[in-house]
Image 1 (spheres, helix red, strand yellow):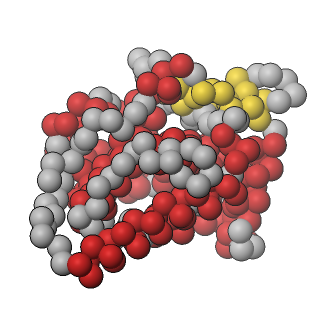
Image 2 (cartoon, rainbow, N blue to C red; image 1 turned 45 degrees about the horizontal axis):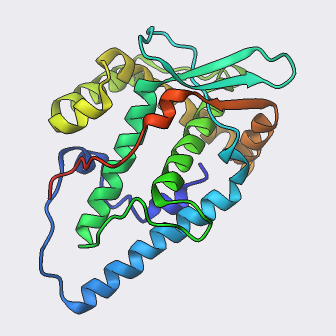
Length: 249
């Protein structure tokens, strides 16, 4: 997906680490401070580049899958067909919170490891704050995942019994190993978490099929999909913010 370059700098921290926390040194030497500043700027620069490439998504945003498990949550993002105006999909807020706060925690862990202060209100060169930029990238990722997921039937993609079992085990692991703060922020049921993990697996399969045919084919498909839909951010999405710290130092 499009943010792979940006996230590559962060992926030295596995998701489990971002969930349960980490500690950091309080007395870095001068060289380490310079190194931390450089790497933090790189992360922010990569984010800016990614957002610039996807600037059309700032006004036009994501959707959700056809839910197997009914969500009691309000809709955070709605996707409509441009021609028919029919509702294609809805992204519920429990799914939005899962990705939003997982990303927040990942950034917190990264900046703590570099002994660098994370300033969500810092203005990026493109004119938005770091928080706004990260939220926009989260929405872009949700959009692309949705687009890939919707192509599953075209390529006869489904999950094996083993893959479905893996999704269930991953949900158990997340719920058992996440901090109380994280679980409180995300506030998601196991059933819905399993659905999210299944959706991720299906989307990844479709992405692999497309890219096996031709490099960047998945990205091209996503661009075509975006041109055919209208993506609306509903009011609950606006309540997502990173002001409350998740990770403990």
